Amino acid sequence: MTTSTNGAPTSGRVTMKDIAGRLGVSINTVHKAIAGKPGLSDAMRAKIIAAATDMGYRRNEGASNLSRKDVRLVACLPSSQREGSYFYAYLWEGCRRFAAESRDAGIAFEPVEFALGGYADALRSLVARLEAGEEIGGLLAFAPTADEERALLGRIAEAGVSVLLLDGDCASVGRIGAVITDYRAAGALMAEQAANLLANVADPCVILLSGDASTDSHRLVAQAFTEALAVETPGVRVVDLPGAHARTVELEIALETALGCEGAQLVCSVSAVGTEAVIEVLGQEDAPAVRAIGNDLFPESVEALRAGLLTNLVYKDPVGMAYRAARTLGDCLLWGKRPAEDVQMGPVQLVFRSNLEQYCAAAGVEDTRAAAQ
Image: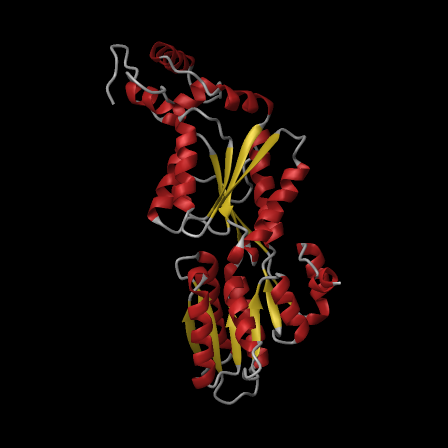
């Protein structure tokens, strides 16, 4: 980009990035000066304002007006559509509950959903908005799994946005905290129940749908399950079937094949997508009679538990987890109240048919029986 004698671009809108480049400071520093936020000396603030004026910088007035009225909190999470309806829809439900509660408290809530494989694109869009001068106070973000996602989240944090991660953690991005499930507790709880179901079984074998190894919420649950089950049931054989959102059909085929040749007495899944595959396969007329433990409450898993296709469900309370994360970030933005704990861990419970209804009510899972009437 070429510049004029005063350092402004000869064409196009002047951004905070341009000002930061001219002065040799961070975008975050420029943002603080222009937005009137604390943390700068009077001399530095005056220097930045003078440079901005000289370069012809113009604030995004729409964003400025909103910022004066409410603090913008953006939630950037996976889509609730298709496979996302099993788990991510309940994260969004927790966010909606927070948004409804905080509507008159000074928070402007903005949802940003991204489809499978589209996280980096969504984050790039947020970076562009910040560089164009838009003010975003906080970002409730899905935990990154790729280097590009981590780099983009780091840039957003450096621009002065308070980033709080949900359903995983990555301290290197500069986040103020994270809210996650106690994954090891989830895996150990599932292993304890698996050991109960395998008691007195000769040559015990478990098929484990272990999910996506790049996702903490899958990998850590699967690891804890395998380790705990080896202690609870010495000599148990675990057949590992990886695969998640983009491989549901392949996962069902692999499960059918494993059930036909491995002699397993139990099937376990660490994820909602894997649980749906279990339900699909075990629901067939010629399916073998094996017990199954799934993860997460959604209409299909609820009906499968009622029908006896599933013996138990591990419940990680995504609604409560997302609400707690949004509330934590909102308190930080409004009152400067940083999280008391760097990483907050939510509880996990084991759901049986006998206590299913109370969990459905708490999670807001639709009763498909009532809906069908």
